Structure formats: C-alpha cells, structure tokens
Length: 133
Image (cartoon, rainbow, N blue to C red; front, side):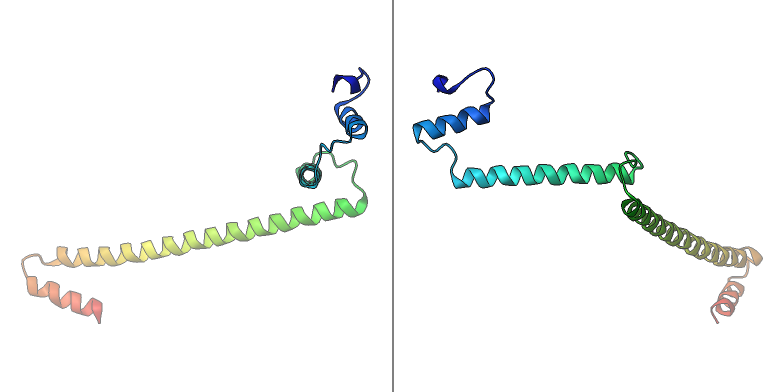
C-alpha cells in the first residue's frame, strides 16, 4: 500500500490508484450506497441548518426576494399560530376563573345559611330546599 502513496495525494486518490493497479475492489455496491446516503444526509442537514438560520433572521443577505417572502410568510404563520394558542389559553383561564367564582358564590351562600339560625336546624333545610328549587 505504501507504494501507492505520495505526499501530495489524498486518501481517496491513493485508494483509487491502489484499486486500479492491483485489481482488488475496495468498495462494493453496499459501501458505495452507504457513502451516497451519508453525502445526501450531510447536504440535507446543511440545507436545514441554513433554513433555520434564515428563520432566525441570520444570514438573510444571501436570500433573493422570493425566498425572503417565503421566510416572512413562515414567520407570520408561526405568529398567527402562537396568537391563537395564547388566546385559547386565556379563554380557558377565564372560564376556569368564572367557574371558581360561581362555586365560591354558591359555597358562600350555603355557609350563610348555616350562620342565619344555627339553633333551628329545620330552617337550614328550608333554605337549602329554596336554593335547590
């Protein structure tokens, strides 16, 4: 293998030269497919990282008008979804607060019934029957 090496040659070129001169196959189809898949995933990763930087507002000088508009639309869509989620959260909080206020009012009314005439238990039953009806 050292016969095929020189200081100016990179590893890929050295292996190619060895394969040509020796006739031995170093890469089979399976390894070639794996290498192609790794290259494809690396390119996809780079593309997604660039898109993420654009969405963060970084590195947007390289974008053309069409791409800038696409980024703007994506950001506006995200803001709309965030506002919808925020409104839904606030409405849920308001409903819960109203339910708790109503429960508090009912409990106070029941408690008031016990304070009116603690000596006369029948009066408590009459007040409760009026509240239920």
